[in-house]
Every structure is written in C-alpha cells, then in structure tokens.
Image 1 (cartoon, rainbow, N blue to C red):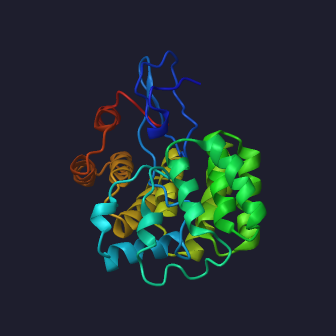
Image 2: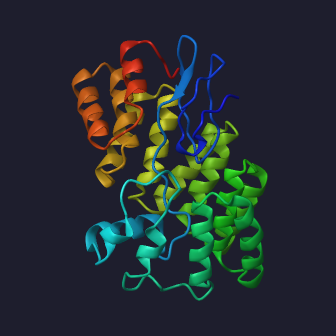
Length: 290
C-alpha cells in the first residue's frame, strides 16, 4: 500500500509507485482512483465529533447551527477534517443544557484527551483514556475516544471492542455505530459498514456523516442512483463540507447528468475542496473509481 505525504487528510500528496493507491487511514471510505501510472483518493465524507457533550452527533450539530451561540466563530467551527481537529466539544460547553447526562464523565479531562487526539497523539490517548475509563467505567464517550485512537493506529479489533463497549453502555450513541462502520469499511465488509451507518441514521435521522458515508459506499459499488439519494440528504443537512458535493459530482457524472455534476463541482470548488484535479480526471475519463 502506497501512502502520500499527508495521510491524515485522505489524499495522495506524493507520487505513488504502484498502479493502485488505496489509503486505509482515518475513517475512510476511500475511493480508489486508477490512473495511467498512479492513483488518488478523491474524497472522504465529513466525520462527526468523536466526543460529544450533547446526546448525539446530530443533536450537537443542530444546536450549533440553529442556536449559533456566542463565541462560535471565535472557537473556529468551520470546515473540519473527518473526525479530526475537532473544536465542537469545547463549543458545546457553552451551550445551555449540553452538560446534561455527563455525571459519568470528567469534562475537563475529556477535553484534554480530545485535544491530544486532535494533535495526533493516539498512543498517548489510548494509555490515558484507558486509565480514564477505569475511573469512569460508564463513560461511553471515553470508550469511543479509545476506539477512534485505535482506528488511527489501524488496530481494528481493539477499536471494535471499544465501540461495542460504548454501545453497551449507551445503546443510542450514534457515534458508536459510525465507529463500527469505519472498522467494517476498513476490513472491506461494506454490507456490515452500511448497516452500522443505517443504524446511526435510525437513531439520529439527520445524521449527515452517516448519509455521506453511505454515499461513498454506494458510489464504490456502482449504485449511483442510491449514492445520489444519500448524498443529497447529506447535503441538505450539512452544506459546508466540501467532500459531499465532490462525491455527488462523481455520482452525477456516472449517471450522465452533466448539469448536476457541474453544479456540485462548483459547490466543491466554492468550499475549497483540494482535489479538484482528481474530479476532473474522473470527468475526462483519465481516472476511474471502479
């Protein structure tokens, strides 16, 4: 497996030396792009927060986007990398009512661990968060954080155990099902990944992350109409993630709808999507995700 320079962003930044470049890193639903002598990752869906003081990822996003509390801009809630560089946890502390249900957590400690995770220190987080859940064994957020750290280290079996533990504690924790979907996707178990994302949507109907992940899975399997359906729902919920219109533009391209393809390409461009060249390669036939 060939890796580009910036693995955390989900794209090939170097020059691959193999015909196929498949990066299995980050919560990825990577699209394998076969080019003449190299390949590129087109896009990944946006990632939801791994630790939340709200009851679910969908609830938190809706509160942030609807309430728009003071200090939101200062904290920096904007285009976020998939499950990375999260500031939503800190923002949520300022939202009325978001502290409910946190009797099983030490908020300050979770914030510190989350910051270390965002800095890429997965091994530290596993060590310290493991000690944390020994002190707070009912913290589904703590178990989820350990799970995501294991995902970053490609320790999928351990990650699965942590997400299952989180769901055992809190069965309505949609983030846990998203995490299981990530694990299944990395293992190539698309059907199981799909079911986990669908379960996340059953719990949180406005779960943009799950819909966006389903978009990519269906696109990879050639189910373009279904990919469009999921992508349009993700876009209707969250219209500030460049990867959603980028993937939608590919889906519409394969459906032969150039008008919609170009429309979503322009959305991706407006949102500063940084792999526009890969999209153009797909449109021109120089690359393919199939």
